Image (tube, rainbow, N blue to C red; front, side, top):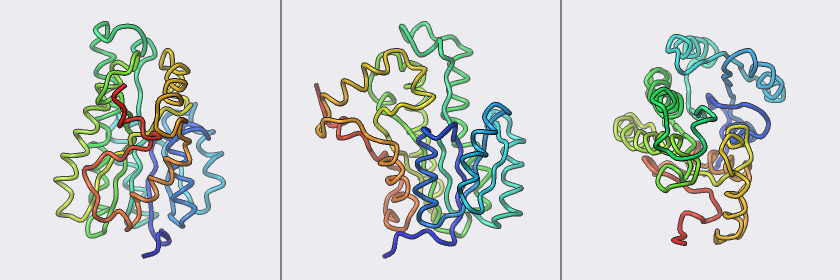
Length: 257
């Protein structure tokens, strides 16, 4: 079975710059022939996303704020007009206020807690609900990005870890709902990578050093490695996998100490 994705279409949410894991996923999908649409939130992000998408033939760039349902609806409307149908969604959206990513978790504010969950977890469900009509009748794939902080304590990850736990639970429930429709839903738990969002976690460099010392492969992973895993999950080679969390973390998740 060939891995190539020619003739298929995908929606990528969460590209911030060239270091984004979502961008690495997009590159891997595009390399195999998938036509892509990108979203951005706000004018500050628009130029960067458009500059990257300029190197992706046939791509679309659309505004979308996942906390504003009407903007998701507009994205779906354009995708229906331009693509007709949709085969893949890569959900790489996550956000927590910087002040919540340091110190003790119990200091988390109610506002910070709700924002992190709405953007980082609920948005997967909100987007899935709206793109479903475009994916009906096709062997579709939805992939989201998680982190081991959703199942184990990572100092300073705090409210984002709780949001990732909710995200991974959402993957399981969505996989159950969408399986009869032929749509698979999975998460990639990536090792720490220097991205814009990761820079907000206090002590992030220490985390990188620890992974490199303790993981079975004795190194950190790259965004490209996560991108290739995403490509696998988007392809027919992963047709028997759904509701799963796939670790791309140099094996760190197997370690007890």
